[in-house]
Amino acid sequence: MAPSHAHRAFLFLQGPHGPFFARLADMMAHAGASVWRVGFNRGDQAFWPNKSTYLPFTDPSADWPDHVAHLLDAKGITDLVLYGDTRPIHAQAIEHAKARGITVHVFEEGYLRPYWVTYERGGANGHSRLMDTPVARMRNALKGLDLDLPDAPAKWGDMRQHVFYGALYHWFVMTRNGRYASFKPHRTLTVSQEFRLYLRRLALMPFLWLDRVQATYRIKTGGFPYHLALLQLAHDASFRDHGPFESMAEFLEVLIAGFADGAPAHHHLVFKAHPLEDGRTPIRADIRRLAAQHGVSDRVHYVRGGKLARLLNDARSAVTVNSTAAQQALWRGLPLKAFGQAVYLKPEFVSDQPLPAFFQNPTRPDSRAYRDYRHYLLETSQISGSYYSARGRRQLLRQVVDMMLSPEDAYDALDAGRPAPRQHLSLVK
Image (cartoon, rainbow, N blue to C red; front, side):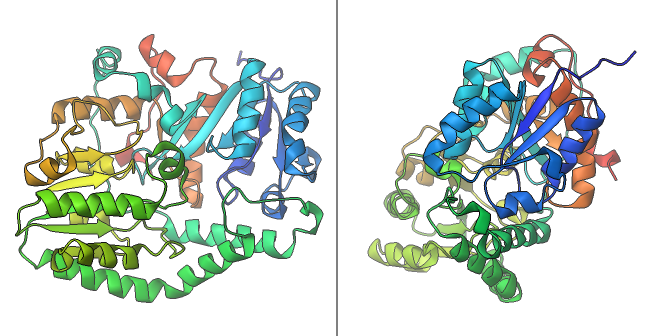
């Protein structure tokens, strides 16, 4: 007889833009658990069709810690579900949940993007259990397992759907948010500014594509050795909360200065923008200014997003703060220099050289160690699928629901020799 989950009560907070959390909650309800959703704005409400389980929070943000503490107790919550663990409303809820012994389920973008998403318990990124797990322990947990690891993907996946749901979400907040007058976004821009940036990006996609193709062509046909800087969104939690820089401009200054001081005179530096870069930070202008200041203008390039593989395949090395794109560099055996906190920041495959020395003669990673690390992630926190496309959601739900309902965390299950069933990527349709 199948186990009953009638004793489980899941409280959902903010999730990825779009219907993923609502679909996930439906599956939990079919498994017998009770589900609730707290909404903080009209965008949250728009993607949660079940009005009977929707709990609007319309009070000032200062009241949220006491409100969520009462809610956890009043609803008998056993499980808290959220996307990203650093935004204030989530961090405050996690604190109260952990004090009560409530299981915290954290979703994030995949550490091995784009064909995987991240699911962990307790925390993600700099708060992940991976931060304190050495490669030797991972290898021990993998004993007796065999997995034909798929190659590093060459494309992002469902970017159009991602941008569409982001624009739609912000449209609801901007035009239908009267009930949530006290709502304040966790980012510095207003909702209308966010919405205009989404619309601008959608409108400019053909022009951005042309600029990207031209820049990539010049680099690919230039015949020069180059180092690849993997940029992130300046407002992303990984960069902001788990990195050492106060601003993107500060990181650019450190990087260009290190390149100018250490790289051979015939080497070039290529900056690859994040695929969702929307222009709120003047990255291109800052790069031009700093390159001129350090006398390397003719050796520095900027590429607006696009397919990472086209640039990685010919790069000499990669540098980042803590972008998950670094995983693709490591999969290719490229030397990597990373700043801040990242789940892949292991001494076996991330360089500890000073930046000028790295650009001059970068040390190569231990590819066998990285292969074991990647295998470990695919057995634990990386779930095939996506949040934004219909096919990706179906693929993700086939596996993650059972993982969430399991009494064992995926890391503990693997340590105990009970790894979760896995879909082989090549078999997924």
